[in-house]
Image (cartoon, rainbow over all chains, first blue to last red; front, side, top):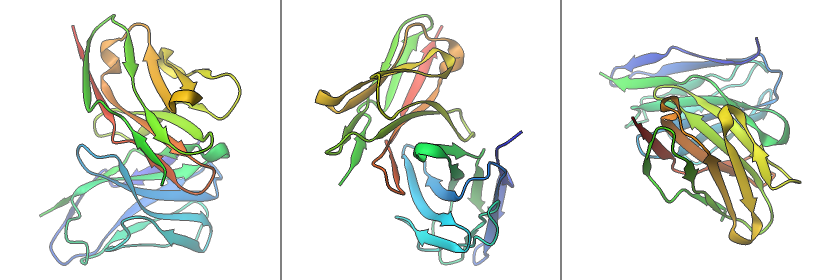
Length: 111
Length: 112
C-alpha cells in the first residue's frame, strides 16, 4: 500500500530540547511539505522540498529545520528557538497536478 | 495575493438533510481547486479536485462540488448527510506553483 507515514503520533518536548518528527512516503513523489495546524486555523507552510537535497522556507520557518537526504524521507526538527511549538504537524507529498497527500499527523506537546 | 475564504466556521445539519459548504477564492485565472476532509486527530483526505473541463466534479463519499468562474466559488455539496460526515472540511487553491493555499476550514456537526 502506498502512502505517507508520520511518527510518532504524540511527542512531548521539554523546554530547551530539540525534537525531530519523522515523515516517510513510498509514493515516489518528488515534492514534500510540512505544515503546522493550530486549532481553528488552516494549514500554515513551514518548509517544502521539491527535490532531494533541496528545500525552501515556507511562511513560518523560524524555529524549525529540515533535511532531504532521500526521496522517501523529509524529517522536521523543532528547535529550542521555536517558543510556541504546541501544534498538530502534518506532512504531505505532492502528486500530479499539485494534489497533496497527507500523513496522519504528529501532535507535539510541551512539558 | 491569492486567498481562500470559507465564510462558515461551523455548520450544523440534521442527518439526512442536504449540505452546502462555501468556498471563495481570489485569483485572476482559474486555479486548481480542492476539497479535503479531516477527522479529529487525523490527516487530511482528498475529497475531490477541479482542474478544467466539466465544472461539476464528483468526489468520494457522495460529495460533489461546482466551480463557478463568475463567482470565484467552488462550493461543496452533498444531497444527504450521514453522521459519519461530521468532520472539518478544507477548501484549497493552487495557482500552478509550489504553494497550495488552504482555507481556515468549516467544521460540520451532524445532529440526529
